[in-house]
Amino acid sequence: MLKQRTLQSITKAVGVGLHSGQRVELTLRPAQPDTGIVFRRVDLAQPVDIHIAATAVTDTRLASTISQGDAKVLTVEHLMSACAGLGIDNLYIDITAEEVPILDGSASSFVFLLQSAGIALQNAPKRFIRVLKTVEVREGEGANTKWAKLEPHHGYKLSFEIDFHHPAVDSTGQRVVFDMDTDLYTRDIARARTFGFTRDVEMMRANGLALGGGLDNAIVMDDYKVLNSDGLRYDDEFVKHKILDAMGDLYLLGKPMLAAYSAFRSGHAMNNKLLRELLSHPEAYEVVTFDDERQAPRGLAQLAPAW
Image (cartoon, rainbow, N blue to C red; front, side):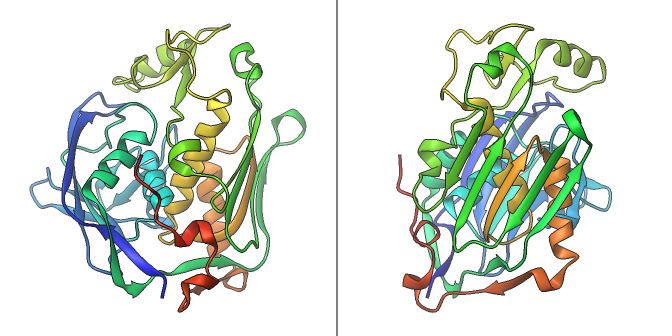
């Protein structure tokens, strides 16, 4: 049986929110089988649990935000991406403010936290959402076109293409295909950082956003070049970060997928729209388990090695 996964022990991190600039503490705790991933706002007078779900996403401007009543957690996608990359099914995430800390702007710090705590197999079958029919969402026309789709695939593969019309971005790889069967999340995707442009940062800060952002947790560009003195971590870091984000956004479905995802100029809003489109067509997917883990796609059956 291909088993569910949680943590072996508790692990903690402290950082600041990218947009709020607030200090925040995270405590990642093991959870029982079939719990799913649950964010817990422990700073509130009455703690509130927010279970991840496509329908729990209430805001997709600049990041993915999940809510339960008046309680919310912003910028969940990088931590969710790390959980997807390592195959974590069940986890409690205690958080002391309304935004997940940005740490270094990638998922690598979260990967380190999760792997340091150890990954435990649980005596319950891992459940996947298997896509049976192609589902697609589109917006805009001509130069403004953007789209995202899910297609049937025995495994998990993502392809993404960007189009920013910016000299620093255009000089890097514009399209990446990442396949969980043949590639390694921790090596190939996890270290790709979020990015922004100085002209946008000034506008965002005027609106009370990006208050915690800087060169230590993002790739920052002026109109012509990357301003970070250490340059890029990957030759195609920009599009790899879009894959990282997509993996986090899609994991908000609540279960790992057996599917091929492809997108052009997609973002948090379109990724969530794609999940909701899938859920609106019950005939387009099914929930499956693997009694014999040898029948599962190789990349989804193996634990990611420590790094």
